Amino acid sequence: MAQKEPIKEERIINKTAICVTYEFEDSEKKIKIISKEVYPKKNIEIHFPWDYEGAPKYPNIKRFIYEGFDGKLPVGVYKVATFGYGFSNKLQPLGDYLGEEIKIETVKIIKKGKPFLDKSNHEIVITEDVLRSWYDMFQVKIDQQKQERAILAQQLLKVVFPSEIENIELKYVQNSIAEAISTWGNSLNEFSDKDKNSIKEMFDKLSLTPDFLTSQTLLDTKSKIDKKYIEDVIGEFRILMKISTDTDATEKKWQAFLNTHSWIFSYLFSFPIILFQDEAYVGGKNVSNKNGKVTDFLIKNNLTNNVAFIEIKTHKSELVKQGKAYRGNDVYAMSPDLSGAISQVLNQRDNFQKHYSSLKIDSEEDFETFNSKCVVLMGQIKSLDSKQLRPFELIRSNSKDVDIITFDELQSRVENIQKLIEGKYKLVAKKNDK
Image 1 (cartoon, rainbow, N blue to C red):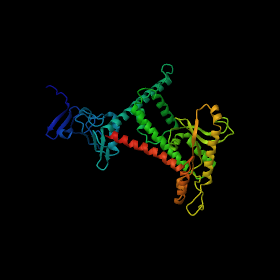
Image 2: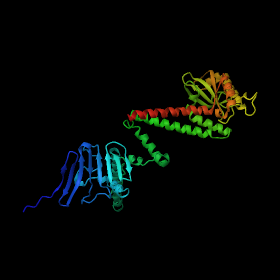
Image 3: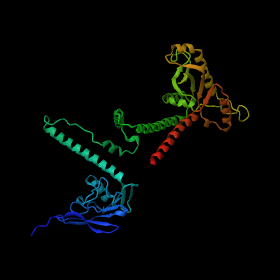
Image 4: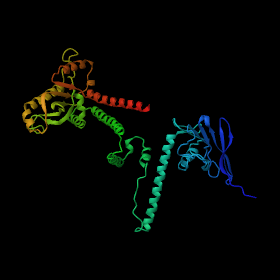
């Protein structure tokens, strides 16, 4: 009598208008189980996973549900019954963890939508994109482990056969960076200085290649850098505004801050400017010589070369004379600090104009002085009460040759840049969501 051929196949055992039921049989291993159900009208497949011997493949997991795939199942799962359905071999640890640790019974994979975990009903829902990302990360780990095992084997052999075995050459495993970044919690504190230097060096090298950054990537990157930079500047500004002392040291801190971020001066003027020189000497042999009058910042219109003078005090400097009103209860005189600053900046401009010819001859830079603008930066509006605010505004609105700007007004102008950038980001985000 002829011996029967072994059976190893998946076949339809029941078919209705709603559901097609499949059975898998392996006669040699004595496996005969319901393998999957297909619901064509709903675009749903349900797989029932088993292992090589026909036993449950995972602790607790009873079914995998696929929704929206039109029969083309995603990467990371077995698509034929021969291997027992469920996660592919690379993702086996994921299935083990979900079943054993979280007690998941149903794994649902959807084409599009939102992932969620329902522990009470022992169900997890993941999207195709999420599954793909997990698959890629596991692949990276497998490649890394493969290289580590090869390196270990090479090291062991080299100890015994030092002259016959070549030196070890480490190679980068693709997607290792992506795998590492996927664990990053978006805090810079997670990076060591060595990490940061490595990222910078890598970016510097990659940015030289023509295909690394597209125009859109550059625009997106610049927007993110602008946003982060403005946030940092505003953070520094706010820290300085918290200083409670009105001292020379505080004034020096403001000078250093404004010198570093000199673009802020452009928000004091209605014309395009550049920082010509900080602490410029305006009454000596040349702009940088000693033994002359010194202005805190010498600004230049970058189109006309006309200079302007900025005198800064501190945010704690008084704007109006404190104490009893000068007349009645709402007439206040300007403070000695303010009157001194106005006199000082006007004196600097006067000295500059008197020595203009000699300064220009001896200077390598081109500049002009056409009734040059003067600015005093000091104090805070919020330091004034309602009765003091009116006389202060009268004082500065009638200051013909000197503009008076307060530190909190300047802060507000810088913060408006942040609002503008954030508004632009929201617009881009809405556009990309469509």
